[in-house]
Image (tube, rainbow, N blue to C red; front, side):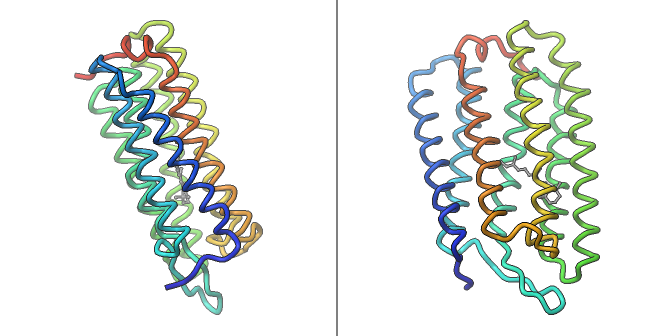
Length: 236
Ligand code: RET
């Protein structure tokens, strides 16, 4: 088993941040009685719980492996993909339920998302540099389709919602667009892209900040108002 290097500081910080986020959401959601509102708490608490386990696995070295690409040996944190495979669909579900999106919209978003993470994982394990870049490109195309669909379908769904729900939907959607687009950039510039423009230490810090903002930051914004969540649309 490979052992984490100096980047482990960021992985421990990520573990702590995700755990604190989880405890905060549990404490905040404790007295919530409204069923619709409870759904958002349940989903969001699972998101940070999964992430804190994933970060713990990376900090302790279990979530780390090595992949040979030509003469290079890359340290690959596979646990990221396990985390993202479950948590990114849950983030989309949070937002889709808020917007009152229908099932077809949810299935499309989740399908594209799972495809994006799956092809990203293939890229992380591919043993030739051109194959890694090809997988990255496929995954990035899926992300672009996903974001396009997010804007189209969610704006449509949110039209039937109250003003405050619509505003919150737009804020969270914009957070997703900005934050999620940064992931392929960090990946290709980081060690995974084999060019190593960003050393593992910097890459790990960047992913940690992105993950905390995209999960805990997203959750704080979503769960800020009890009344808005009670107004949120019911899916069919
Ligand atoms: C990968 C591989 C390269 C291409 C693309 C990727 C996209 C990853 C994304 C991850 C989002 C993660 C979130 C985590 C929250 O904590 C897999 C890096 C497009 C968008 C939001």
